[in-house]
Length: 175
Ligand SMILES: CC(C)(COP(=O)(O)OP(=O)(O)OC[C@H]1O[C@@H](n2cnc3c(N)ncnc32)[C@H](O)[C@@H]1OP(=O)(O)O)[C@@H](O)C(=O)NCCC(=O)NCCS
View 1 (cartoon, protein in one colour):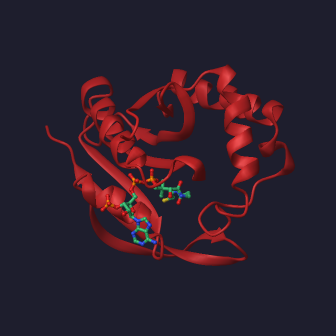
View 2 (view 1 turned 45 degrees about the vertical axis):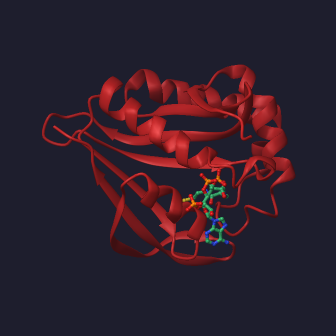
């Protein structure tokens, strides 16, 4: 049976497991994730990044989460670009799951839990996301969570050596 999925705010001690996943998955993620500087793959570099994410959290622009299975960190789910103004109230969801834990439904459930944070905790009205056109697993995760594609952002992200189009996704959350 598959293990359960939880999400919680990221903490400084998550730096080491995150770095370990990203070192192991550098080849597997090359097509989908931007190139990163060498320090990204060290616990120290991740600790600095976590500090920045938590500063964003305190400023109200980011809700940085980790994904847990059996209390082990297996990935991240981040609500970024939060616009809390009453006439906007939106944020953008991003995520990754370490290759050792993929295809067990964790990303789908993590996004479901992140949408709950967006409504119940952040009071947001609209969720957005962006995927590579070829990233079918990520698109499945979004469709399963009620997102629809609404456009293409041309030449919008430099991935694996060239500028790629991004497929834009939206889900209206409620009032
Ligand atoms: C995308 C990603 C987060 C998915 O994580 P996951 O925990 O494996 O996702 P889930 O198990 O919840 O769902 C994966 C879905 O993709 C489907 N899938 C897997 N491989 C597939 C393939 N080659 N083609 C089509 N669908 C595929 C699975 O069947 C599942 O769909 P279902 O819910 O209809 O059964 C993970 O693969 C990842 O981190 N990839 C690298 C980084 C990345 O792409 N991040 C997202 C950038 S937008």
